[in-house]
Amino acid sequence: MLEPKVWQLTAGSAVLGLVLAAGAVALAGPWDSGQRKAERDWAAAQGGTGGAHHDGKRVRTPAPAPSAARVLAELGVSAESLSAPADLPGDLTTTLGPLLESPDLGPEPAASVVDVATGEQLYGQRADRLMAPASTIKIATAVAALSALGPDHRIPTTVVTADGGKGDDDKPAGKSGDRPGSDADGKPGDGADGKGEDPTEITLVGGGDATLDRAGLRSLAADTARALRDRGVHRVTLRFDVSLYSGPREHPIGPNDNIAPVTALMAGQGRLDGSAADSFGGPAPRSGDPAGDAADVFADLLRERGLRTSGQPAAGKAPQDADRLAVTYSRPVSTLVERMLTNSDNDIAESLVRQTAIEAGRPASFAGAQQAVQAELKKLKLPVDGVLLRDGSGLNRHDRLTGGLLTALLARAADPGRPELRPVLTGLPVAGFSGTLQGRYTDADATTGSGLIRAKTGTLTGVNALAGTVVGPGGRLLAFAFLAQDAPAPDTAQRALDHLSAELAS
Image 1 (cartoon, rainbow, N blue to C red):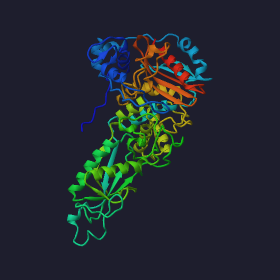
Image 2 (image 1 turned 135 degrees about the horizontal axis):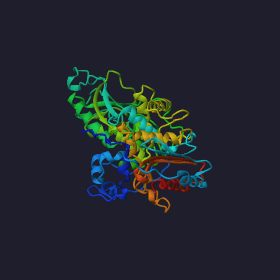
Image 3 (image 1 turned 180 degrees about the vertical axis):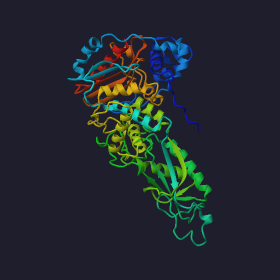
Image 4 (image 1 turned 45 degrees about the vertical axis):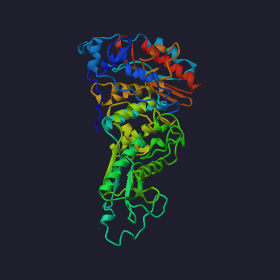
């Protein structure tokens, strides 16, 4: 399988500003009024989306934007002109100050607005105050994962065996019937293939891919069956290994439709309502044992391919000297990051922070992930003093970070020297068009931001946040973060946040 390349903006953050600013320019080719036609047509055809405390069904992540060179050519802008001075917004204190005083945002909301090209903070209100970020913490999760793992890294799910791999054609006479085989129901085997054969033990090893689905397991089962047939094996005992992760499986919020038990093996994110058949994201009833369920599905798929299984799959650690029979890989981390941000996918978020911990040699647990992510952000010289990253999804109400950190993360993702971080920006939902912002920016005082703002939402009871990028006057790319606690109602708080960010685009 060909691995996709990571999209890079070679001309830097100012180029990205022009790309996003193209909403005001009518262009030919794949662009139409600044919105890619494919993305616009696709987004218009979708339903609602979901994630952490966001109702609705998931939509796909928008494809990365065209290359910078192509966009600049269509805009009639040369790379040399990017160094020309651009107008900065006017007095943001006058513009944003009264809006921040809205009672819809609670008593003391925080705000940070940064000029991405220069790093200058243009506006700050309690920007250094530690506050609950809700799902905007996924921006930190994304930056840490891309920095530690690289955008091309893929998460494996493997099948291994420690047995010699000899079927009953190779067994000495008188041995094959010493231990009668049994099918998945524990009954004696009576098929032509493998009758009386001692089962070969195989182990399905979870690698932490939260996007593994039935299609991935089907491909893995086909490769496994082929490898076993080549060894003359027709009967197996299936185990499943989830030892990659440690610590509690349950998120501190407890059983919740917004997240499955955090385990190294799952299929369809443990969804029980059929929503995993064609999409992920959004709340759904979850299995209490997603790893066991995934192993059951895998066993069924092996039987469809002519293998007989002995008993039900059981948990067990794969032997260290096991041979690999087959492997399937997740999409690249760059794609997982975009999908996580667009749909506020909590399962992917918890997977990515554990992958970051594994890369750092730390335990793949809630505690180990917190340490690994914080250390990775510190390497990037980001302001993490006092920050509490208790999970990767933002569902933990004890998470704490600052608006200043969120804008610093976004600015670092636009750094021309950090092209591996660009999926953080391309994965942000587009106001009024995609992901968790698809149904927002409809009020009269926020419509100016529709199609121009990319931002990550955050919603918990009493907590509302919005952090992203917008092109201000003169084509300058701005990063912003607005955090509100003790907001009286989520709907009015969201509208107030939309209005704040839309003011930056006008």
